[in-house]
Image (cartoon, rainbow, N blue to C red; front, side):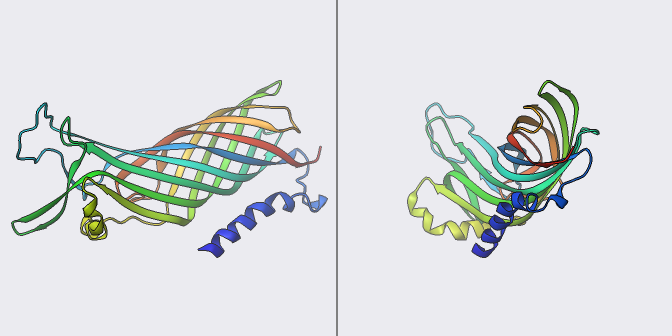
Length: 266
């Protein structure tokens, strides 16, 4: 795994030099080459997976100001990447690709009643013997390296201010970290975590792909650094079982990026 990370890092660092070593590599005519450094957040939307057996209100004792309980789930992704873009000034269109890191964090949390900040998780059911664990939260981490391919079109450009639309597809190539963790109400239950996760059937695939679109604005003159902000439109996950805790179909979010000119030829 360390060798893979080092190799990816060397590939990213070599991108600028590839386009500056030889003038013959410069794109002809109306084409210019840009380097994009990006970061942002995505928010997958979904529901708790059916194989996670949660019960909010099985308590047999009376709780003052009791309620039926509440369960919530959330997934957030942080993205950071580096892309090289070939942009045609006449067509106002560019195509880019590179490497992107996405760190996903998911959590299921809830409470049984107004003064019980845990929920019940069923992890075993054999004949009449059913076992529950009191859980404060279940968390999941997935850290991916992926390759995005994007097409950008700038229909409006006036005095250094441009409005653009973008479409892209992304495919992951490696999952750097994949982990699921349970925070128990009773810390003594931690020794049983691996058994409980196995009984729950926690699993997901190591790779994912998405189809996405965005709209945004850029600020900056040609030949100088440009600053961009874009908002993801509702975008699709093309793969299934991307997360162990939630079923997710689409996501939205936002992204900041800086565009640096690498080479250009009039």
